[in-house]
Image 1 (cartoon, rainbow, N blue to C red):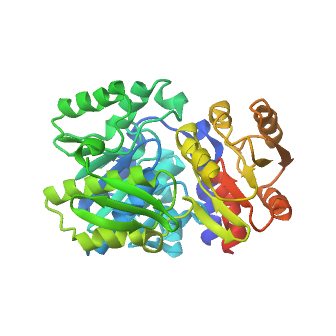
Image 2: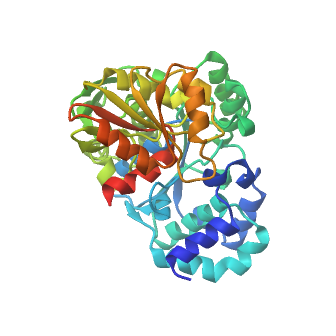
Length: 429
């Protein structure tokens, strides 16, 4: 098989949750543990950091990887979903996994892993762990896929667990209250292993983390309390941050919630220093200021064009899109155009209630089975006072927005990571 055939095999044999939804979801760690036995537990050959939460875990994972890389460590990074190339999920010092390794992994081991019937995520996770071992990484930053307690990544024994925040998402699997969701996310808290909580949330949510950490004697740090002298300011080029041990420095990521991610990451760095990691202050500055170049991060308030200004962001639930909606209202532009699509398993009404009413919408559907029909999205949007037309593909929606936009207008592309995934190749080639 060549690379394209190999990726097609992975999608067909082991359907990806990101593409088809709950039918691909496999609860529990049995498959992950079975695969880990087959490959002789590769994640035990290097240190790991585990990052979970509802939103911001991708940015947080990439920032930690960039900082550790700038500190002189050889760093693996496992994240999901990918936007353009499957190999975005598996990186070492920013470089994507080799195509030939992906091919060889499937051809060499499929007779061993096929009887396990793993999910796409379970298998690609093990591929990542094996690749990191082959590349002799010092440490790997591992992003949770869904939830935490029963997520396939939860077989690792990390040096640090990070939980960014708790919001409503994936309620079918994680529960329909924030404490229930927090309980699932808290599953990555391990015995005697420090844990950083980015945003405290409600007292009920905080208590879930306190109780879990106490039950396994895990040192618990709430970033909002630990980093109490933290300050963040929006600038024309992004953010400028400041904390007790880190005088004023810029951040590369421009998204409206990056102040919260920055505080979480700085707290995680302090905890890692206490556990014996060597992380110079300059590495922290360089990591924040160069994270996109160092790690290949895309889709976080990413500017794709300047005239008219075109921005994309992968925020995909009410907890994340409320920050996007607030930022869109602050943008200095003549008119706002929104190329907008959603997945069919999200709380669509909760999102639409947040979105700006002053914009012109181009309702569309991404090229995955989980995408919500654009006509249904338009119908629901109209009930919230959002006006626009429908387009069967993201490309057609973007073309229509560009034709209607003046040079001082703003075009926003988002609502779903799948919409951004369809859009990026149109601009990046």
